[in-house]
Length: 257
Length: 313
Image (tube, rainbow over all chains, first blue to last red; front, side):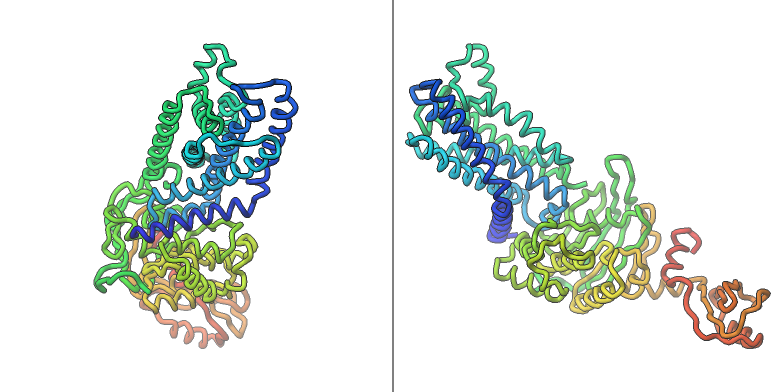
């Protein structure tokens, strides 16, 4: 296939992915808007008013970037994991495997599908947050770069999970038992300064800390970790996840007999 | 529009010494070789677990081979699998599309995976959905289609990029007789238009009606590979069922023929190679028994197939 034909194949996969999550928007887009509204009401307004300032900002202002990032992470991940595993489960992934479309196009088609859902939900959650607080952006450039990199990273992670999954249980184990705890312990609701030194150091092993703090820097201009180090970690993890996903596709792991 | 300029002498499919050992140690293919000419209508037969689906899986990249060589229109799949894939259309045994998508979307998307621009993809999808009688159902969820319609949807999907080699794995399994006949007509039509067709089937009547060449695979080995005509010529024995007008006596015997009285008016006769049915009719006529109709007990190919698989041929 020439480059133009590969592009057509890529657009076909992305379009299919986008129409899939838009078709079932009550399952894919609406829950994040409702959940985040509840977070804003409970943590931001009710509890937040008693907490006072954090990092020089009201608690509501502090948690909003973390909650937006939480929505991006969970949605980009769950879009790819559920869509790709679903196509494995129904064997419709064979439509792609028997065609001449290249592995990188298959991977990027699904990943871009995940990125678009992550970004769409981010827009929805951001709009919801405007009902609760005023949002000023410190650096649009950093915000956009962090959103794209993070959604790419977690879409790739969702792809890897989907490749290894044998049942629908397997695609919920990682989000429930790994992703959610990492998000909650990744500084969405608190500053690292509040932690004892030991736990603050342990937290630095959590990749979500860098994602949340880099995004918070883009929005508020404050971060618990070095921005350079945060970007290095995010880019490093993304490259690793991409390379491993390509390896899985090239070897046909759990896809070809 | 068929892709590329192909020299007519090249085989559509060439398999040399193909082997497959699965991770659990099961040896599904033990070095099979076969060649399918361009324009042929070829049947790959064999009992369950013989290695048919493994062979097809390797040709279309869903199964990784352990050894050997596969070429599609002289393109070695080890050297340029994407180029080889462009020539292949595959209709698998199991339904392998998203049941919640619409038939039109399923076929258009498949065209997209082969790099067909949107307008051409839609045109091609419409052409094949119409030809296969699915245009009226194009916008319903695929899960709402009947079993026969789902099979035809997979054929439309396999043809949307106009492959030169169409491989069908049990295409008429679970399809009613009327639908099966219309699918046969369609397959014969596209074969006449130049598409090489390989099919696996359990309906040997189907293979006999459609195919010109046949390979029989058993326990991962090719046990027969010839034209249907040659194969049937080698058939040693045929069994006929005769419907008699007069009552058949229980003690009936026809010299040199093995007979079995099935009921009062039905007689089964085995005719060995070199014997003539006329002798049977003459003998029965001599006993005052007239024949109203006659049929094969089993499809002739089926009889041959059973003989080959049992090692008796």
